[in-house]
Image 1 (tube, rainbow, N blue to C red):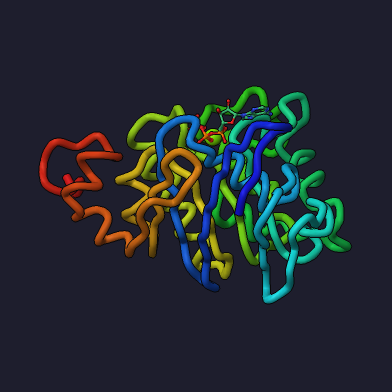
Image 2: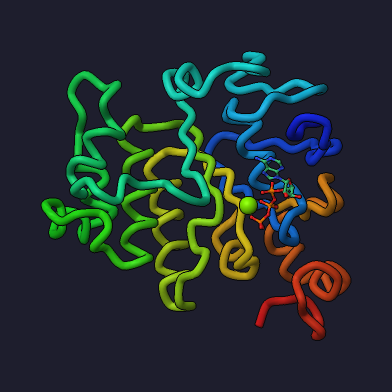
Length: 230
Ligand SMILES: Nc1ncnc2c1ncn2[C@@H]1O[C@H](COP(=O)(O)OP(=O)(O)OP(=O)(O)O)[C@@H](O)[C@H]1O
Ligand SMILES: [Mg+2]
């Protein structure tokens, strides 16, 4: 798939897939086009060539609203909650297309949101805010969740909490396409991964293989030692 902004091509030929029930992680340096790739899948950015398929249907060029109806959810990298609204109001917005929105599942995975449901989103910690962003998107019970750097800017402990939450989301029946800079933590919960460099996927493999891969670790994951497991 190829996409970009105006004349600028950012995603220069990416070929990826996510199978049902998988967590797939995309890792790559800043500016390589990870967010653009997710935005293209979700219909915010138009692809200029290539096709995108979801549940066996060609969804190339489909609009976000229709993709949500079809079972896709997107947690953007930034501005992913309504800061001035209460936690509960954010969740209600997330589920506004649903007839009888069910809050139990998101409160089960994110109990802190139940505790703070009457607080404004702006009063939440960074981690709680990311949880709210995920929870809002989960209100439509998506079969595939696209997540753009949910652990960015969080303390290491919180990063791992976030990854555990993503695993719970998967266990709840959603497939996940995750973009992450915290490569190690993400690969530990992922089934497979892709390394994206300058708009292309350069390497793909099982998450374990990537964690163990000497050259990938050194080149793209900032590790001098063998693999990146430790
Ligand atoms: N709305 C936009 N208009 C024009 N160019 C953009 C726009 N958004 C991103 N770009 C450019 O596209 C390229 C890829 O950006 P993108 O946000 O997809 O990268 P990324 O891999 O998600 O980076 P990061 O790791 O920093 O989040 C960058 O050169 C960026 O400047
Ligand atoms: Mg990005």
